[in-house]
Image 1: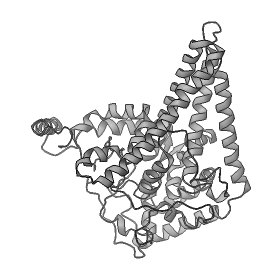
Image 2: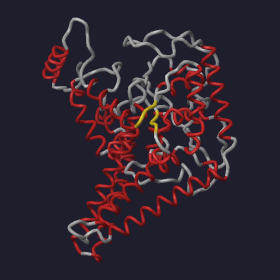
Image 3: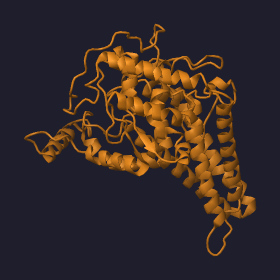
Image 4: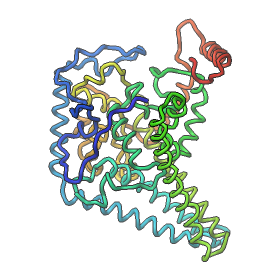
Length: 445
């Protein structure tokens, strides 16, 4: 994976200024990556795969005007942040902590049976699952994006927050905030595009490995926090390059791995040792066991929910991918255009939006990653109207519809692309023969 250069996180006293620059990485010379002031030439009508380009009808001047209109929407919101916004995030944090503490208290009595069932286990597990989802989605993800740094509250700040997730926050901020949000859906640069284990676009290279991606997808959802930790650690890249790495690079990886293992140990100790041990005096080993299973289930529920929300924002039908060739010279308007075409929204109630961390407004989040999440619902109609004005598709749908389209893509793109005059099974058979001869499964199309 190609990584963007490092950028400093916002300091407690640094103003927001511009959202796209906040999301983008900086060049080594200190200038922002989105620095090209000259609009690019007219975009081609079709992509390499033969699919139509949804932005081909826009002139370079229209794209830059679109960017200026989006800038105006951003300024209006960011300049109007106030005490009500601060009260919102503090209220969400208080609700989450009360829900978690209350659920853990209830779980102390999870061994008690009433008419053959354990009501405390069911109630405590449900409450703890909701608390973990809230902490991960609406609080952790958004605080670590710097959405609340403007409050100057050291307890709710991107540089100091550590979330209830096995991936260390600083490692996640690098791979997510700096790399993914800079190179959204750029083939070869955004490894969030399938997380390196899924093929979700026909322009992605096919290999035998992807035949089994429906299984990888389910496993990734269940173990999502551990998958993200390995992804943030860039474990796959290390395994592939370790023989060519210098001693300094290996030492740097070992330091990051030690940090990740320490976080995994801390999370496991909290959920799988400390809390079950606290239940022992209230019902013995049986009660401790039921508390342990409740924590396991709550983490699984949080993992599957987080994975589902994220795939619905990044991989549903209609989402575009982008070529690597002209990203380094794209203008501000072109960067905005890529965020809009490379994201999709989930429709639903206010409660649905809160439980998704407002990532149900994925288009708006990709446009302005540092905008307070409670304001996305306010700007979404404006963004939708603006995209309609420029005849751009605004991808949106209910959760089940969006998730269904992703699963359909996972199955469809597990197979090689159709090639005129060749059968897919012949392509698979030839790839299998090459892999067998080279003993390198998954590297040959």
